[in-house]
Length: 252
Ligand code: ADP
Image (cartoon, rainbow, N blue to C red; front, top):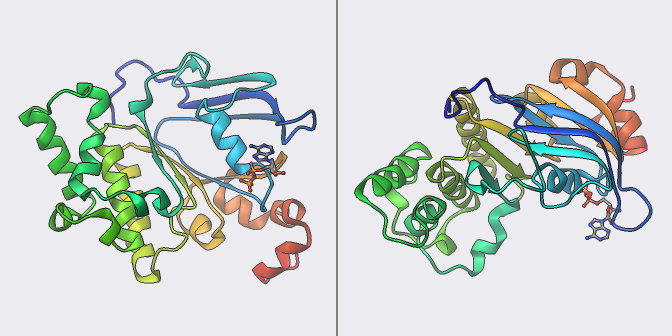
């Protein structure tokens, strides 16, 4: 946090963005700005374009129309990937990775040291990151031997080691044991308190309403973008989800 001494540009900014894999747009006319220190959740039904929007925000896809920027730079030119920590769903790739937690976190230093050796200072950053996420005791354990929650914390530690100031999480607690979910969100909240911007793609609306400060509700277009408390009171969810909203126990 606080790594940008300049008056900060938006962390993410989309202006009138339209994108489709074919000629049909999957997201349409999206404008939004995420500032440093925010905690934003993107919600929407399956197939509503959440993953696509995330890829556009991270510069992994580029708009057909409109413009996307990251940290004030066009997403087409942005190349400082160390500033973005990505935590995939259940970090499922880790199932095949026979490496230890410390090795995962060490990878977070690679953008800073190339593939050269880590200095003592780099290792101190790795150790700090392990400590912050409460994984010091598991540092030498293989990620394949961790619980879902532990694995996700290891991947957060990798982001901390890379000194990311934006943390992007794609349904991070799917498949994570119930007892660990709360601790996981507590960790996210404390990182956000320390100034890290959190962007959460989330299906679990309980988690969203409990933790995020701001909700972007998507279904091809933006149905709602504003404070979580207002989202809860609005009818955006019902409009975006259609009949599926009834599973929330509310017929608004
Ligand atoms: P969500 O993350 O909300 O489930 P996605 O962004 O994954 O939504 O998908 C939005 C729409 O785009 C869906 O109709 C999906 O089938 C389509 N889509 C996603 N990825 C691709 C792709 N690589 N090629 C073609 N269509 C895609």
